[in-house]
Structures are given as C-alpha cells and as structure tokens.
Image: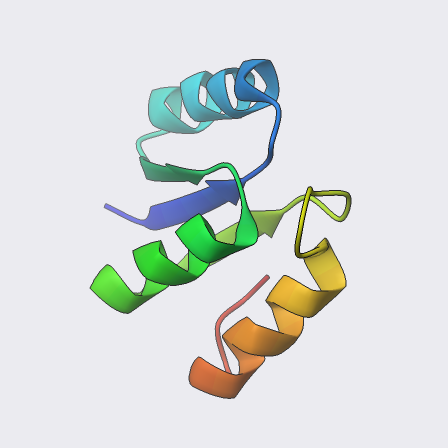
Length: 76
C-alpha cells in the first residue's frame, strides 16, 4: 500500500486529503509543520509527500530543501 505524507497546518485540510487518499487505498501520514514532517520522513520514507507551501515556521520551500538533502528522489 503506497504511503503518502500530507504536510499542512490546517487540520481540516489534512483530514479531507486523508479521507480521499485512504478511500483510494493509500496509507496516510500527517504532519502540521516542517519539523514534524522531517521527523516522519526519518521514521520511514513515504512514497510521496504532499506539501503545503505556506506553513508557520519553516515554509514549504525550506522543508523541500531539507527533504532533498536527505531523500533526493522522493516525489514531492
């Protein structure tokens, strides 16, 4: 089952995306900020990351750069 990490600071948006993806047979991980997203990736690399660009603290571009340092080929 493909594993997708959804990174968004809005809980309602994460919930909606989670429901859609789970109905399609995906395993969904969630993170509400950059640090949480990077920690989830360290726990186990997902197959795909859906990344919001506007986040508190680290924005989406900064998170993308940090992910690329660890996982060059991870689809985001």
